[in-house]
Every structure is written in C-alpha cells, then in structure tokens.
Amino acid sequence: MEQTLITLYGRPGCELCESTEVIVRTLIAEGGSRLTLSVVNIEEDPAMHARLLEQIPALEVAGQLLPLALSRMQIAAHVRSAAGAVDGKR
Image: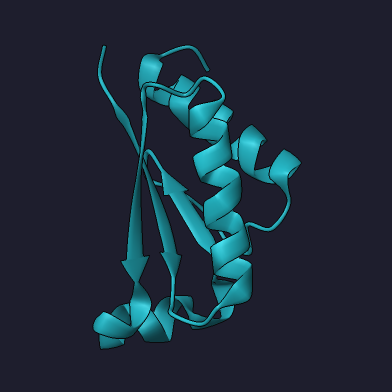
C-alpha cells in the first residue's frame, strides 16, 4: 500500500504550526499508517516564504493545499479527502 505524504508548511517559532504538527502526528498515530509527515520551513526558500507566509500553518496532501490549518476537524477532513483522492475513493 502506497504512503500518502502530508506536507506541513510552517516556520520556527510559529506556535500555530507546532499545534498543527501535533494534530497531524496524532492523526497518524490513531490509524494513519499509510500517512507520512514532512515538515517544511518556508524561511529556507524566499519564494515559498513570500507565497505562504500569511497562510501558515498550511497542509498539502495530494497537491491540495489547506491554508491556515488550525482545527483538528478541518485537518482530519482535508487529509481524508485528499488521501481518498490518491486512493481513487473520492
């Protein structure tokens, strides 16, 4: 079974980004064995920083970006929807 990559865009010192990371890691631990998390620091890429600064924490799954990913319910729904699209179950 193929892994689904979840990319969290954030930056150091961003408390909201840290909270979102905890939520995603919890979702993975609760049964998302097919899910993998990659954390990207937008400050390492000037173009990415300019594009995403006002949208972090942002999650990308299967090419679908969720800006201001703050609530567990919103994040879980986004991950399920995007992962379903990857599996062809959408």
